[in-house]
Amino acid sequence: MLNMSRLNIIFLLFLCVSCTRKLKIQQNLSNLRGSLKTDSTKNFILYYPKNSFIDSNKINLALSIENYRADILRIMHENDYPFKIEAFFFSTKNEMQLKLRSQSEGLSFPRDNIACFIYSRNFNGYTRHELSHIISINLWGKSALWIEEGFATLTDESFQTESFHKQTRNILNTKDFIPVELLFTKFNQFNGNWFRYVETASLLRFIKEKYGIDGIKTVWRNKALFLEDRSQDDLIKEWIKMLEKPIS
Ligand SMILES: [Zn+2]
Image (cartoon, rainbow, N blue to C red; front, side, top):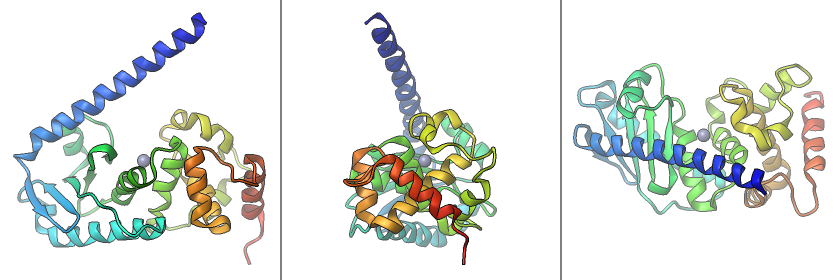
């Protein structure tokens, strides 16, 4: 009992720290609104620094972000997303970290429909990933962390030089492969390890290929890897078997 309440206190402390951190970032964003240039597209309000690379490429940016939204909805088999999203763009990682006091390279606040990205001549990663968090969580509700992250990563696959199945196949049976059961419960313990995204995206891609979008939605709703007639073990075995199958 004593242990349980201590655990609860630790959990609450963790929650408070992450809530306070998020609130601070959101406060920093509110303060920034007035100093940034603003544009509106059909589904977004865009904020970006004046006289920047983004400013001179805003037409491309507006087109890409609308296309990303459409791609995500297509992957989710959803017709529409009813909310306008506020998208904050920064020219460099340093600028974003300095202005928001956050170490991230992309951020999303699904409840508030706000996302932050880096957009420069050399880098515009994570836009789809962060947008996907906003759209999926608001349309489908919250899920387990590994499912939310794996799915957001999956929506970004067309930007990868190798598919997530191929990347996972390359590390299968090597020390880099993380047993997926560990990712289900300890996703955050593998912070900084790219393979946590690759493996969960490959696993969800496999679910989508074999069981369709309904399979993905069931796993999402269950907040765990199982379907009506398939256990977690069954699905992991099927996934590994698919990865081990020689490619024709
Ligand atoms: Zn994410």
